[in-house]
Length: 359
Image (tube, one colour):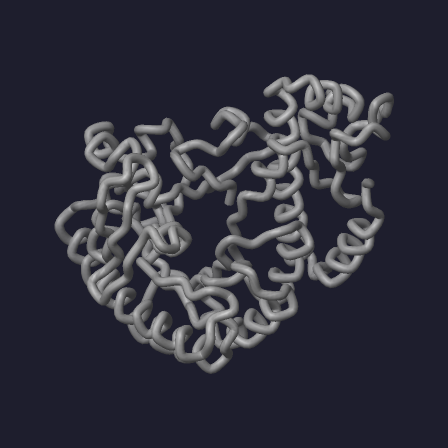
């Protein structure tokens, strides 16, 4: 899922996301940032987030838990919720499971995430247990308030006459527990007991070693429901996506395609290409000769390097477009290989090509 933090996927227009070479079916919005600015009353007055931003495809909103956690000393966590100072204007704000569900109902997203508390990757088992147990209690409160809002018609994004779908919001639970397997298993059991439409693995890629992340995923994936969506939050690189799919993950979000695009780094089928490097000054090849996106069909590495070194905003726009196309197309090929029974072969060849680094 491309990440649209403040109601926009940075460096690209929705028309580009909807074009054939990207064809993004769902994007992610950020509850915390949209709640603070422009504010939920503004979005409610405009008919919900879909109408406010002009995006008619699916939306997932995170709960704001991770963003509040990342504020560090600017926030104070209690049983009731989290009190913090807004990074926008310094005002004192309070976010709880109930408030998060109310904000996401007003946003009208298609998939809502429970409000959770994220422990640091290196948290001790006592710290991680306190965080996991708080997340479990907050998940129950999120479920209860979410159900009340659905019954009361609080969802601004509900689709009347939807075919094959209910048209109502779906609610996903989040499994926490840092790097501790027994806590992850307990968190999943308690989350499943509450019951959700899908299940996410949170609290990874927050400073732990990559081997630790895979160890945690291996341990929890075998216990997750096979007939419901399984979402790995905040991950990751192209190789991370392939390896996570091999372990049973269905959904991902990450800022890498857009953030790295703005800083001049392209992801390609043969590794990363940093367009600022002098070696591309007269290179007439596209970023990726295997890519059929509109950028690769039209522009050379030499031109993109010129744009970047000249400080032209178009450089970030074009590289972002290519990166999104590469990530989305990679997952399309993953789905095709799974359907044809050739995913192991695709996985091996994909990782081998990436090792031929573009640098």
